[in-house]
Image (tube, rainbow, N blue to C red; front, side, top):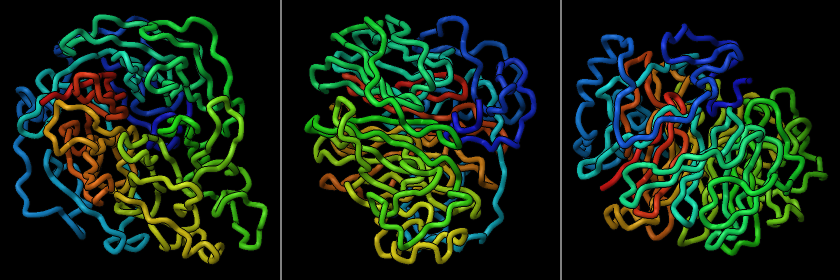
Length: 491
């Protein structure tokens, strides 16, 4: 397995020291991804991993994290802006608000480009994620095989993509939502599945799954724990291979269109030279050569027909979501590496049909990529600026919007995005879940640390968030693929 399985993946030329009892498989040079589990995962509402070897820093952090995982909200008069907004894991805490603006961006190369791969350690027995005061974090499941994207079925079942194992798992919650009472493999033999969607959304007849190279669907009846038959191919030829493998999938609010995200094959379209006079592109800023139909959001009918490019220049839209009130489509996006600690910011943004978001020629508006200087001057004033800029190299993955009633009223309609964590930064960032603040259905540009505490020290982390979903009782579930756990956050 190559590095593109883990967004943002550590580069292929880097390796890490052996991880002892945790059982990480590095035979394919993929850091921080577990070997597929041979047995069913342990499901619980709490519980440590048992006796494991720990470093002293991890133990010190574990002591600080003991208890229910509650933390006082950060005390600040307003959001962090300018250089303080970039920060790193040492300042992360629930309630801390950042607002990164295009004018705040440093110049490319202001700092050296770092290779700082995280070392995933077993979760210390007393370690808990930190949440805002009034919230509670509980361990819901452990021992999963690299859980990634999650979706909640209309009947309340939780569908989980175990991407590397090539399968979709279904977990059924107890009446009070505090534990799982059913744990089944819904479908196996898939090709790096990630995105999951139910169609129609209210009374689904199908479960759609986005493989790395295709979209398939299974016939579905409410409450199915196993696929009744083999998957039917809906889209047979998604571009695949190269750096990014995840494909997410959502349906527009009216149910008429299926959106599929396809990340770039490279970091920065190396070797491609844009031609301003090329009139063959079907959409502004559409990529050329081996990047054709990549770094895009694609559009199809639900049956796979009428393929089109919906939006372009989005380097790696890992998480797709549709806002429940406005119907706007959103992307949670990994931007490019190699320009220093604070470039280029990742982002969460509305995705407008026909819009161009810059990659590879520009970033965050009309900032020209120095690797592609002078190649596409015709596009300079056509770049859509993303709504919410996030600390560079955070590796923003899963995205959902809060549509429950259990959190305080001000959370309703806000977004939650999982930040998998950096490798291309001297002081790591990410490894948390952030809240995307909204006002009247529009992002304010600010984001707030919501779930933190997965970083033990400058070298070690014990969790890498990937998926986020809201349960029927209004709890937020978070998957992390470093130690194969799912966390439940309640209020």
